[in-house]
Length: 297
Figure (cartoon, rainbow, N blue to C red):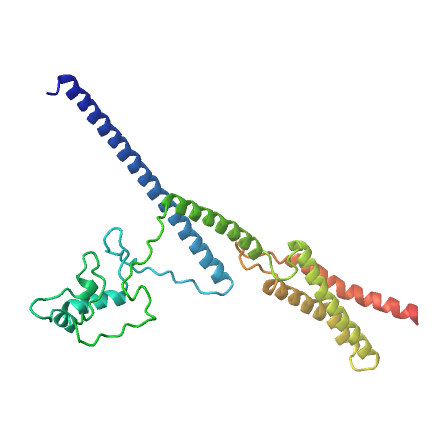
């Protein structure tokens, strides 16, 4: 007969197991809360990254991506320890339960025989086949049937650790952020002279347009020497026409190819600097051309 000390030891053992179970349940609940919080955090990060990618795509002319918002696929309802039945096997099982195969499986001299592998316990996904007796013609089974079509359970997938998967997702999100920052830096550089500073780019563009205007001025000077252009028209083009055309050409070039794909506000075009360069370069080029012509003459 058990003594009081044995009952007390058993009670202490049960109490310790109960406390251990409570501690395990609390740790599991805390782990689940942490996993849910991490998943929510990654979801917010991925949503923000998707919105930023849509903005970058719209900046370069690509429409926003359509993210599927449909319900998730329903999980498999196969019993534990057994792979889900393929569609072909499920159809065969349903046909074996209510089709002609079930009626033929029961034919026999006196008693109903089990319907092939469908009658075996634990194999509901296997379709019924004809069970022939002595002297009956047997059906030829196909030799190239796949194991899934034959009802053989597939290999169970390996268990997935959610902590490892979330850590991989976090690493991929960090990598995506890094590439996104690099993309934004590249998007903030214009297509025209991307390595130059904005001031140097504006000076180069206005100077190039002024050089083109100076070339046109020299052509008009040569045309004036043969009598195609009179002196008043030449003076008007040199003092106002060609500098204005050079200035507006540089202004449009900076607005078209000197503008980054992503920029906050309107990029500076340095209007005063361009006006000074264009309206000073063409007359100075005309004076230099006259001096060079007299020296060579």
